[in-house]
Image (cartoon, rainbow over all chains, first blue to last red; front, top):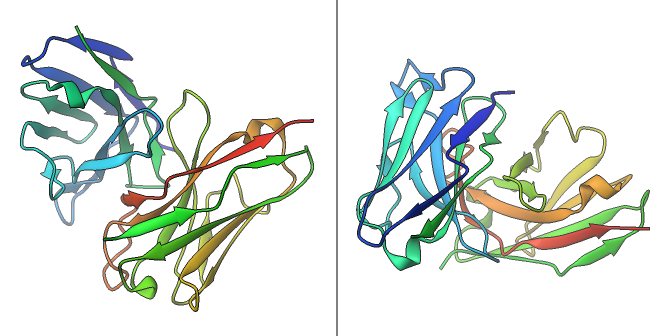
Length: 112
Length: 124
């Protein structure tokens, strides 16, 4: 299985500031035939199921605010929240779909 | 709107089986694959397998092969996940989730939306 490792495990950011979460895969998740990375980001708030934010590493799902952006390719990926809002407090997960799906351990984002 | 509504919490003894349901609405049931995932306390989700509700075909994660069975009922737009030989490590929230793209294209293994989750506790 591909192992997904996120950093940091937790993060505290002031309102309005930038939050950056990293995700590293144990092998490349880039489909060379389509030039798309099989990397998805989810947001999970307490007591709720995960919500899909970004797929193909950088394509925002419909309805997701544009302060959320994804970048990276190959094995190294980043989720950025450009200006943190109170409602962004959550745990964020990355997931690869290149092979049998696997998730990272999660990054807990809090307000400083 | 698209909704997946799951059955209620379950408490089971080790060695027993559990069957969780997931009723879909707001779209044509047979046009999207449905996945099952679980999430143990404090951990990331874990993919268990996927069912094509139209054909009834399934693919299971190797870890669960032989212990999980996924079925579907097109008349009630409901899919089921049964896990047998339960042990304490199976205590988790179990989710169904729709594949992001319709089954007329390739399976994406991206999950959107998710059901509300079903708590399964395995305790003696």
